[in-house]
Image (cartoon, protein in one colour):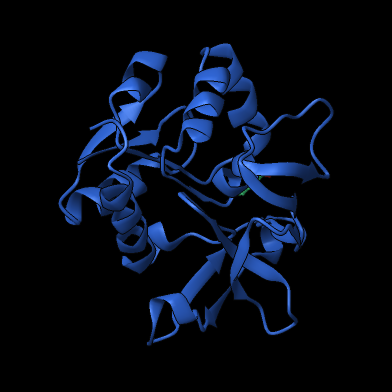
Length: 197
Ligand code: GLN
C-alpha cells in the first residue's frame, strides 16, 4: 500500500516517518500526478489558510475533492481536519476547504499559539491506554452532522476527533507524540478500501 502525505506545508515529515515506521510506502504529494497513484492520503497539521491557497495554486484542490468523493481514504490532523471539513467557521476571508466530512470546524478554538495544551483522551475506538493528545492552535468540531461520528471529546464535551466512512480527522497531532494508533486505525481503512488497486 502506498500512502500519500500532502507535502505543500506543515508537519508532513512527521506523518511520513510514522507511516514508514508502520510499514507503508510513502509518497510526498505536491502535484496531481503524485496524488493519482496513492491508496490513501494524510493531510498534515500546519496552517489551513495557507494549505488552501497552495492546493489551489498547485492545481490540487479539484483532484483532491474528486478523490475524496471517489472514496480515497484520507486522514487529516489539525489543519488537515479543517481541510476535510464541509464548513469552516472563522476561516480567513475566502478560505475554502476540500470538504467531505459532514462537520463544521472552528479554527483556533482554544486561542493563540500560547494557549496550546496537552491532555489525555479516552477514545473507545482505540482502546486503552488513553491517548496523549497535543493541541497546537487547534480547531474544535463545532457540529457533527448525521453522516459523521464523533470519536473523541474533551472533558467539556467538545468534539476533537471524527470519522466518516473512509475519512478520519483529529484536532490534535498523534504524529508528534509517538502515538501510532490513529495511523494504524487509518491504515486499516486504507487496506479495507483497496482504493486504486
Ligand atoms: N490554526 C491552524 C489553522 O487554522 C491549525 C494549527 C495546526 O495545524 N496545528 O489551520
